[in-house]
Amino acid sequence: MLPPFLRQSDFRWFFAGRLVSLLGSSMAPVALAFAVLNASGRAGDLGIVLAAHMVPLLGFLLVGGATADRVSRRTVLIAANLGSGLTQAMVAALLLSGHYSLLAVSLLTFLNGLLAAFTTPALRGLVPELVARSDLQRANSLLATVTNGTKVFGPSICGVLVGSAGSGTAIACDALSYLVAAACLARLPATVGATAAAGADRSPLLRDLREGWAVFRGTAWVWPVTLSFCVVNLVQTGAWQILGPQLTEQLSGEAMWGFVLSARGVGMLLMSTVMYRLTVRYLARFGQLASVLGALPLLALGMRMGAPLLIAAAFTAGLGSAAAATAWDTSLQEHIPDGVLSRVAAYDDLLSYIAIPIGQLLIGPLAQRFGGFHVATAAALCYAGVVLLPLASPALRRLPHTSFDRRTPSAAQAQTTEDPGIPVVPPRG
Picture 1 (cartoon, rainbow, N blue to C red):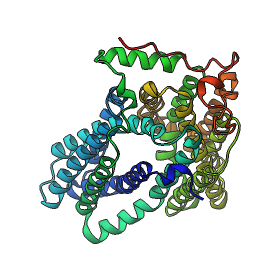
Picture 2 (picture 1 turned 120 degrees about the vertical axis):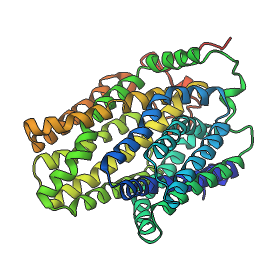
Picture 3 (picture 1 turned 90 degrees about the vertical axis):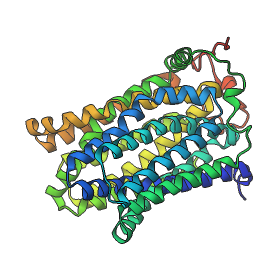
Picture 4 (picture 1 turned 180 degrees about the horizontal axis):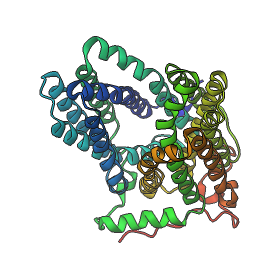
C-alpha cells in the first residue's frame, strides 16, 4: 500500500520535477567537461568554467536561504529552473553553432551557479510542506534514491549521448530538463511553498540573515555537525578527487577508478532504498555514526589494499553516505521551524562546503611533501575522528526521531531539559 504522500498529486508533481531535473543535472558535468575541452583544447578553460559555477553557488547561498524563507518556495524554484534552463540553452547554442567563447560560457555558468544557490535552500524547505512530519524520512529516502540513481546512470547515458550526438546536444537536454521541471512545479497549488512567506514583512535582508544565524548557532545539535563536516570536506574531498584516481591507478590500473566510483554509487542507491523502511529512535545519532564509513575508501588506498577490498570499502562508504544524508535532512526538517528552515540549511551548506577549495589546493603540495599514500591514510583517520566528535553533545545523541514514536506530534513537544533544542524565533516586526 502506498504511503499517503505518494497518493497526493502535489508530491507526485514535485517528485516528477526532481526526477527530470536530477537526470539532466547528472549529465551536465560530463557534457560540459567534454564540450569545453573539445572546443578549447585547454584544461585551464575547464577549471575556469567550473570555478565560475562554484563561486556564486557558495557566495549567494545565504541570500538564497533568506529568499526561500521570505518568498514562496514554489515561486523561487520555478524561477530558478526557468533561469537555469535558459542559461544552459544558451551554452548549448554556443557549442552547437561553433561559437565557443570562454568568457561567454563562464558568464552563463556563473549565472547557473547563482541560480543554484537559490534552488538548494528552497528544496530543503519545501519538502516539509508537501508531506506530514511522520513521512519525512520516507520522502527524503525516496528523493535520495532518485538522486543516487541518476548519479549511477546519468553519466553513462550522457557518455552515449555525447558520443552519438555531441556534447552540445547533451547540454541542450539538460536545459530541457530544467524547463520540464519548472512546468511540473507550476502544477503545484500557489499555496504550496508559501508557508514561510505568509507572515513575512519587508524586513531587511540582513535582519533575516541574523535571525537565521541565531537559530543555527543556538541549536545545540546543528552547528557541531556542520563544523565537523567542514573539516571532513577539508581533508577528504581533495584527497578523494585528486589522490583517489592517482593512487588507484598505481595500485590496480587506470580502469579500476571507474569501478570504485560505481561501487560507491551502488552503495548509496541501495542504502537510500533501505532508509525508506528503516526507522530508528535516534535518527540523527544513527546518521552521524554511519558517516564514519565514508573514511574507509581513503583508508584502503592509504593502506595499499587490493582492488576487491577497495571496491568493498567504496561500496560500504556509499551505504554510510546515503544513510547520513537522509538522516540529516530529515532531522533538520523535523526540528527546525519552517519559517527559518531554508536559512539554517543555507548556513549548514555554506559552512560545510566552504573548505572544499582549500583542501583541493593543499592536497597536491601535501602529497609531494609526505607521499600520497601517507596523506590518504592521515585524511581517513582525521575524517573518522572528526565525524565522531559531535556525538559528545547530548543534544545530538538524544535528539528524537519524531516518526519513531507517533505519540510525539511535534519537535517542540519532543524537547526536554536535557535537549536544548531550537531557540524560539522572535516574531517579525
